Image 1 (tube, rainbow, N blue to C red):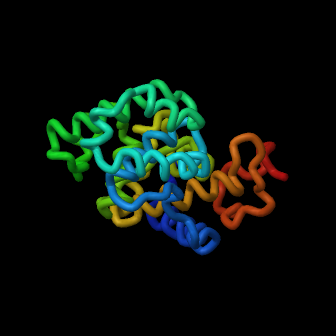
Image 2 (cartoon, rainbow, N blue to C red; image 1 turned 120 degrees about the horizontal axis):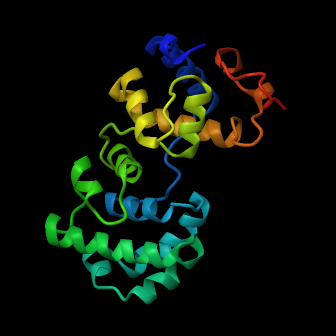
Length: 217
């Protein structure tokens, strides 16, 4: 099955089957407002959501909003987020991001993609997470799971996150973008894993062009 033969109807039917399999698929980062989600998503780079959720309660208690974090001591922030990895760079980005929100956005997280990706430490993936889950604005999040599953299912051929995002957005109506990412992430973590995919347990195995090429278990 080649990507050129994949239709939007085919993809939507497959998505519906996956949605039934993973009804709990949603944003796993604990947050109460857009600011908290932005911070948590920045911290989630190269780190598990579980670990981030253990760190953020203390961080949010200490720094309630961008204004408070913008003037924080970097060493203090580093110590609070150390267990998430790459803590020095993340601390620098968090403080820089907070300062930019204070300076350019009146202490409020913007609702535009271009404004979000202009913030320190924020790329398209982080921006789309915030848009889709904090503001209910369609955003196609492409992480390693989404990219891998989309290519295996034949929905995308691009090797870059930006390329996969573009191809998926062309196949799907915007109203499905945010939830599609959640579903593909769940499927990628629980079944269509990187090293050994559990094809025998896959709910859409009969719709996958990659089945039987050395990843069954």
